[in-house]
Length: 493
Image (cartoon, rainbow, N blue to C red; front, side, top):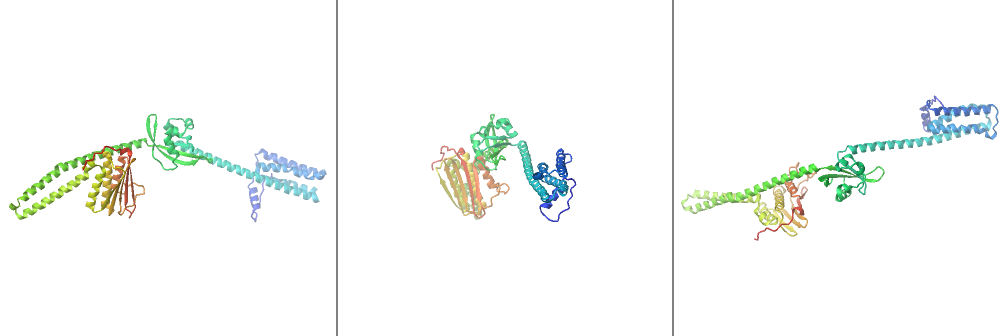
């Protein structure tokens, strides 16, 4: 091969500039044994050619054979060192062959040898380019494979380091991969996990929920019993592929058992507090009715008896006496209304429908807002706590209409079905902008927060719909689990 090549930068652009640049950066492989074998073969063939011609050996029609044999080292250089090695070797062969061409070849033979050298260079270029292309593709493939391996290692590293249980399953529900957290959670080793199905871990219903949910958002927690212990697992499902184009489902399972137990404890505590509050309200309403109101009624009657002896009273004192009587009657009425709001006795005696009808009548009389009650389905009694919860939600919704809505009409719809009961309170007021998260805590809507807490304690679902200028709709849905029909306790009117 040629050593120490030096090319000036050509003025023209194109393939010659690229070739010169590649050859300029070429360095012989001094420590490569194949390099010296190649040099020896080139020198041997070139020397043989010179000796044949110098000795006057006439090859006749085979005069092209010595030059043709030089294709062997050129092709070897192309296969070993690529395009640059092939061109450099071809140039080296040309340099060694020039004296022979000038001294011993004349006429057509000289042009034939030159044509062989040109052809040899073309073959070298073609083979070298193909070799470089194949090597480039091989390097790209190796780079992609290395990147894929690195990505795979990173994926498995993240998979194993995740504190949450992670399952990778195929569309049929068979488990393909499971991380250490999943193995610990379900008490199985990795090999066992890869031989079972999701249904074996979560049950048929749980597996159906997972395989049918393509949302990346966490869904409702699953209830799983493991070793006699009931666990709550919140799944997050992501559809992806295994890197080979095959669809797989990645399932993240977050153990929310302790969180669920804390929430259940808080709900139980809140229910107990609410129950105690309702008992206090009932006791206060009874004391107001049986003691305070009765005492005030007795006072009114005493004032009436004094007024009957008006002839013996000074005229000015009689007017003050009548004013005091009116004040006492007003206090009695206010206390009666307050006692009803604390715990309407009609709710225990006649049920939710009659109580809400009376509530609407008092509401319209007080606010002058038109109201309507619409019943659907067969009206029946509900458990006491359920009736009280529905009544309180209705009461709070009407209070919000009175204070904030500026409405002229409100309607209450109660729908009894075999699956539960649904309450809708709809007004035509000014409405309000709903918070983006659906959380009314930050917005300060304390009445709406109170209704949400009531619904949660009932095990029901509260939905609030509103927008500025379009009124509001409050919907409370209570399932049949807490609306089991009880014997009708209504009094015949």
